[in-house]
Length: 468
Ligand code: NAI
Image (cartoon, rainbow, N blue to C red):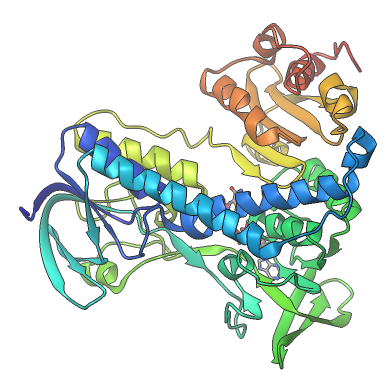
């Protein structure tokens, strides 16, 4: 093989592999280095995909047990087979791994197996499992090495009793008692999975609300719903220590306001207090500039402080740590390298929490708009008044649209609904095109669909809902 490439991408997560495909499409001789056994990165192997598989299976199990009977579906002896559920998850991962391999072959992307290090401005050294080192020359290098879970000081993740999301996606038994530290994305999705499968789950969150960054009414409503599902919460609470006794864990925590100390014993502890960028020693050695959170600093063109070395995804100091943000950056950077106008609109990046119901948002929150001194109006529509949601017994949640007070331009949307993650695409498009609430209200929405609640929320901005 000729060891010279136009583009070498380091890391094959959603940012990296998409960047490699777009680079190849643009005519570049492209390689992608991956140190793990399979392609797809955290998202495909130990993140978004396995968690969504377990969220889907566990929700089916819960419905079969608690709801089928009401629908006239009488099933006796519904039993959980956890190892089969895990096998199904693993099979899904494998199918998608093969999908990425297929896309690499189709686009003639060379998959370099091993750990990629940037040894010089134009040299990527790949160290294989056997320790063999091979140098490859690259005109352009794209760092897409993602992120790794963080922990709290003094708490060591062993992936057995004290686990990160990786361990919590592969328990071989239902933990009788599970304590989750952190009421963010990972904490709440995995709490849902294990609660549905039978665990007694307690979430300990440092702040006085869950999902920091979302509007308070969304966060409060979501908390109520999760409480009703049987998940316990200790808010405004700081974990002070986690100790192991045999194969159990003792978690000590203190309420931030009352200073009351408590202790709980459990079978597993999930630490879900955020992730940090995955930076190798080679990055610091080369002098690539990092910000004070140890993320790679990039300019508008995703260039690092070394001109032909670019970075995208979780590893950079821009935007949220989300797979779809990384994908868009992967496409943008390939196009920028090709001299085109690659671009990512950071104001329109949807976020979704894949619980049931799901929570999805796009654009700005009320808090952000107040801070920016922008006057706005709000339209809300509850699913209790949406016919499709009602007949499906999915009447929890609402759609909330925030529009500019003067121009009516949609500035932000939040949705709590079983299908919020799918619904939010309509709103992302609306924001991208600069739609007004009136534009959405005048767009014909099929009946009966959950999306009619979007139209009604747009009507609510002008106080003229039809069904509520
Ligand atoms: P996160 O940032 O979403 O939530 C961490 C939570 O831990 C916050 O609520 C924070 O206040 C809390 N916390 C921090 N220190 C604490 C302490 N000492 N005691 C108690 N609570 C504490 O991080 P998470 O859930 O670990 O997710 C990591 C990343 O992965 C996020 O950036 C997220 O965007 C991404 N992700 C996205 C998903 C999705 O899009 N559905 C699913 C899973 C992860």
